[in-house]
Image 1 (cartoon, rainbow, N blue to C red):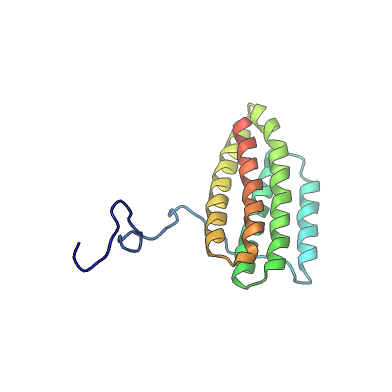
Image 2: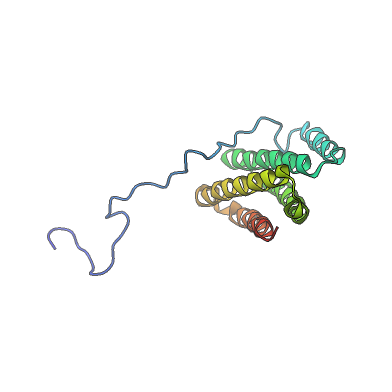
Length: 168
């Protein structure tokens, strides 16, 4: 074997020169542009989002808004974890979970629709959920242990929404 000790049949990734994990080029960065949970203005931001959803009657447009808000929640989770604010990241995660439950609830109606806009939004939901899952998986590997359970819960809701999409 030479100077390095090895056991037959077992290899270690540090011994092998493996490339690092990288995200696809098409992955969004998820940078937050609004107020973060914990800010005095966050309540107004959430209120404005809810008012916008209440007065949106077209299901396709409503899903577009929900996906946009879900992207913001992912960005908030990522930012708050990097700022070591796990409680506030949990608040953003709870908001994300609520949005994804609403998205999942409306998927069957969109799936049975014959409009091309409905099919386009279903494809957009699929793409968004896939990128959310990759980002959340990445965060679960790089975040502090105190965030592991929260991220696991968020991933579960995201995966259930993906299952609902497959059924739609």
